[in-house]
Each structure stands twice: as C-alpha cells, then as structure tokens.
Length: 149
Length: 132
Image (cartoon, rainbow over all chains, first blue to last red; front, side, top):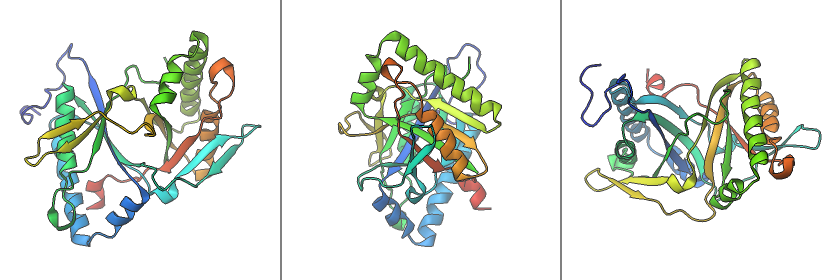
C-alpha cells in the first residue's frame, strides 16, 4: 500500500522501531446490557463504523489484531486447586470492568495510538450520537512476555 | 473454540511484583516461558502478549471535534490487564485446565501463588465478517 492515510506509518522501513499498542474497550455488565438493548439499526451503524476503522487500519499497515470477547456472563475466574485442578468461580462484583474487545496497532508514536483510540472512542451510539467512550491505551512489551526465547 | 486467559492486577500488585527478589522474578518469567511452550507443544497456542506497566496506561476519549483527550488517572482499585494468552481448544473445560496451569506460576519465595486467571471466549469472527 503506497499511500497510507496521513499520520500513518509507512511499513517495512528498515530500522524503524516497532511500537505496538493495545487499545482496550471495557464495560460493566450493566453497560453491556444497555448496548444489547440498542435498536438493530444502531448496532448495525456501530458495526459499519468498526468495519471501516479496521479497513483503514489494514490499508495503512497499522492493523495487527482485533478480537471481540464473549459477553461477561461467559467469564470465569480460574485458580489452581491444591492438586493443580481448576477451581472456577463465575461471580464478579457489579463494578467489574470487563474487557469487551481490543485492537493491537503497530504505529510510529504513542500520539498516533491515541489518535486511533480517539476515533474508536467516537464510534456511533444510539441515534448515531458519538459514544465518546473511554479507551485504555497501553504499549505492548517487547520481547513479548511468555514468548519462548 | 478460542479462549482468552487474562491476567490482571492493581497498581499496588504490580509494584509489589517489582520488589520481588531477582531469583523469584526469574523463576516466574521462566515459568511463563515454559507455559507458552507447553501451549505451543499442545497445538493450542494462538497468541500471547505482555503489556507495559500501569503507569504507562492512558485513557483516551474523543473530544468534541474528535481530537484525543488523554487522562492517566485511574482509581486505586482498577484491575489493569497485565497480559494474556489466546488458545484454541475443544471445550471450556480444557481452557480452564490451561488457566489452572497458568495459575500455578511461582510467586514470591517460589510459593505457588494461586493467581486468579479470567477465562473468556473470543468471538470467532471480526465485525466485518459478521456483516457478510
């Protein structure tokens, strides 16, 4: 892709340090239930917005990954019991902020990561009004934790 | 079926971790590496990432004209994502078994920490695929 959008990284420049950032969308159970009550056309408009964002990030070469997670009802806390067997618990405090989904982007600067996060933040809500939802931005550690050397 | 194994911690927990003796930290890192290898050998590994420390976290919102407004202040109780694994397994039970393995990571003094690991299904299709 020769003409990335403005501010976007030009890929495959040798010696350019890779900076990966994760953009996280979180919400409580109550927040997720509100979203599920949106009208089908509002949900459709939001998906169209996300599709466009992913397309733009792919074209600019900044897209690394995007994963939506299952609803909070499907969340389980797992600990190892005495014999190492899984002990599961599905009870969470009401205030718990669940990870709802994330994007990983490969960008030239933290400012660019924040720009993309702001775009994500302004995704349309009910009636097409921008949600201006908070998006948490963190750098991915390199070398990756848990990666076999 | 893809599942995400999620490790979280408060700022205080992250700070306590940095004060562990060097050999305890090394043992923990060695465990995490061996765990990822175990996932790869079992053919279930999809991806894994470790995140930068909470003091580098920023909350970003779009301002009225779409410009980013950043904020680095979080409640003390906030559970920060520390890192995750995504695995592809046949059942939730299998995902819980691997999560229990991760939970066995050695803590301070080599004591098995019984660290809680959150397990969630990953939705298989990206939004653009759902629209097709």
